Length: 284
Image (tube, rainbow, N blue to C red; front, top):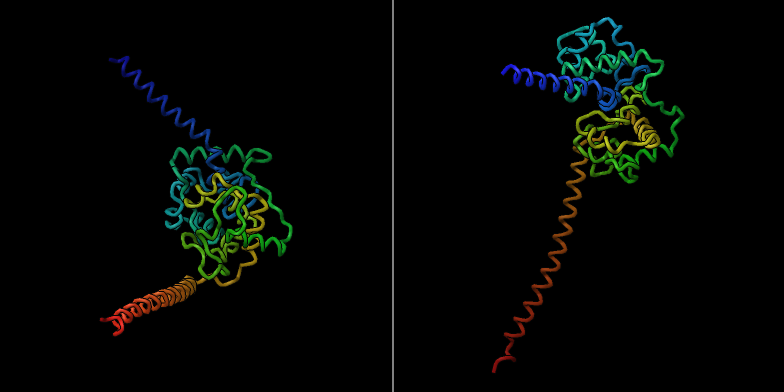
């Protein structure tokens, strides 16, 4: 009996240890997929702060774990340091809870950040994007990519499927995601937006682009288009709906005209046959 209990205990312990090791081993992949769109380790600030030497900041490890488990709750509770981070990122969008986030996952991520911070160059320093001035050709290509008239090399979905811009065509863009006219302003500039487009972190965009990443050239062109749009008035859903309604009315009127013409021709043909049959010359 005791041997059976010991065997079961050994199996349970092995499962727990395996799961813990797996969490630790996939922390780099987890950080790359869920954190790098807003943070670097030694590469400077993006939408969120640079995480290099995170453990040396004035808050303790327990605070960091609580924040990773529920950033919104910590901010809304009035924590001064959390509010400082929130305000520095624009004060509009809360840091999302990472998918599958647990206390153990948070511990592993903090260990990863500590280890990477000690390196001369972390693997999470982030991609270095070109600072060359945008051209008219860049902006034109960016709009084509947004509208889907130029397909992405890796086969990703066009932006207009879910988003709109100030100059989208009459039928308008998608409404699943927000209008992107002011996205450069919301994400605090060119560098942050470029990093976001490398690995979009929202629940909707992540599975779409995970296997279909954009190239640096495509990101450069899109950012050029978005930067040129900053300060413009976002598209109005009501205006697009009016345009769609007018097009529908014109189309319906055209169909009525076509069917009316066909019906009149049919009516006259039938009437002529009836008149011919009922004329006096046809009776004995």
